[in-house]
Image (tube, rainbow, N blue to C red):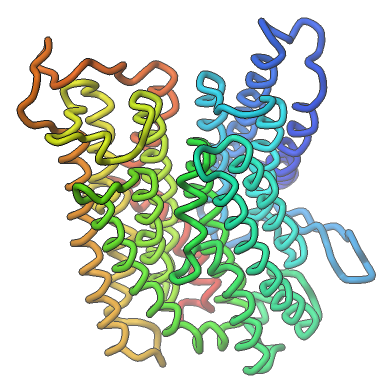
Length: 526
């Protein structure tokens, strides 16, 4: 595929959702209104996100897979000459999988919403915010200018805030405010670090700065910039103890908001660490890596212990909140891999990023389906004294929940296994200059976290999917039958199941993309 076509594809991927967001607020053209204006705008959301997904797949097909380290589909034009800010777009083996994942999850959310609209204000505003969120997220993974990255990074905050506060459930105001305050405060600190790098380095171009590999920045400048940028990105990742906004936001968000928050927004923080921190401030990253690894290891164990406490009987644990806390642990493996500063660790982190988006996105969809049927996600209410018996009452839904649980705990052969395994493997032998005994301690903590993860997920499966002795009904079910997986749920969830299996069985498809790009970002892997 020609360079010009790739340029057009990438530019369209970024611009089409933004134009679609504006169009969603306009009246439907004559003859396209359908049965109602609400139906027309929801169909518009499915159409636009479907078109963006098609463009992303076309970009992935046309991408030169023999040279994934080379920045492709690049567009570089001057925007603010006085400040040296340019509209610079491009994609490589690191960003391409995240672009496709974002496009896929947003399309599945739009499709799901067409049949199951969240309770709240006008669907027009909902679709417009969903498309604005997609445009900002895709731009974050496509831009190659520090100022543009910051603007795209901030663009997603407003739509997510309103999706939580207007279409969320109980506690939505608190969850939305905690989300916006934490991320805005982190962004202010990050902006100072980005400006410091741009001014001292003489350019805001991420490719040029990465090529210099910190040669134009003093050691103290790199440490200060890495601390500032890393703090802002750590809030979004999220790193323990800067994670406390996440459970409230996830619990209050509508189903689609939780899917995008876990599957897309958290990835922006870890992507920034790989794209900006490691290649542009290598000395600063090396200085701060042990601290990041320690926080990641503590976060893995902490997240698992909280989930185990929420899963036990009588704790009034919320299933949605439990999965939110599980993200703290799973993203801890991503951060631990990055903190090893090795190609193996960073590749594992990028793989775990994608796996978490697929598996946790599926789990939040499933929890949304359970809430639609039961009216609650409270574990004690769901399971009752002997278990919810979802296997007997809605066997396909129960089977999918069990599948999501074993994928999340890292069962070999599914996507969740490879990223965590590579992150721990890299911790056994981190980059030169890092304390190996310290990283061996982090490795042990991460291994303990995997055991705790298996424990709480198996408890959840036992309580929600299985059931004890109770009133017997036809077909052997315990309790009244529930609607099983509906056609639109099947359509929205199946791609995530298929990709989880494919990524687990064929990890080379993703690692073959990321490894050359990671080697280049880390200076040849030295």
